[in-house]
Figure (cartoon, helix red, strand yellow):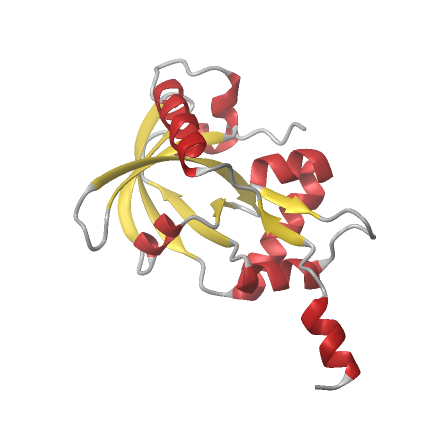
Length: 183
């Protein structure tokens, strides 16, 4: 192993997932599902939604809370959770956002470069503190702001993923316009 390879092997990734323990995560998810399923869920529903889908292998119905983000003209969910695999290939489901439930199609983004660029754009848009909370990541801030290369490494190493959300007809524009980028 050369000196350069030794250094590369010991460098800690700058971006990691920030996950509470399984019990805390289950409690928080249950609380968010109850809140976001209400007809008037309040301001938290501007950037959090419920994804309703059927497990690809199990056939079980799932409802998971997730952040919804606009990148360009498309909607995405940013996640590293294993449920993302249900959307490769794409899957039909529903999205509850701002108290409204609508048909949706979910598709896992399989292009690592598009995923890395998407995460970088969201990180820069939300700012360091809010981005870490909204994207479920932790960034080692001992150096400069994370760059595209840091997000490329996180996409393959953490892993980080994006899921495209295509809303069904009826209220698509109204739902899409409600996403806020407040910090």
